[in-house]
Image (cartoon, rainbow, N blue to C red; front, side, top):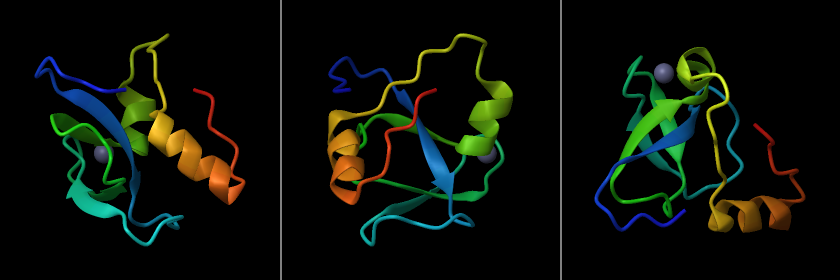
Length: 85
Ligand SMILES: [Zn+2]
């Protein structure tokens, strides 16, 4: 989702040890465990990267996770089901 209020969004990222769907992913590190992660170029500019593993462990019960429309389109183009969290 677009963010114009300057508040960082948590971006759930794939650890680089997992296979990639895209050749143009960007590289970063998880803010919690520091492992290398990859993320899509269209994520919000003000962000905190968190790996999927830390998200699963640390997300509050009932946390609302949304998928960016750009990401949904990319997954649909690959025929990959959009994850439901
Ligand atoms: Zn992590």
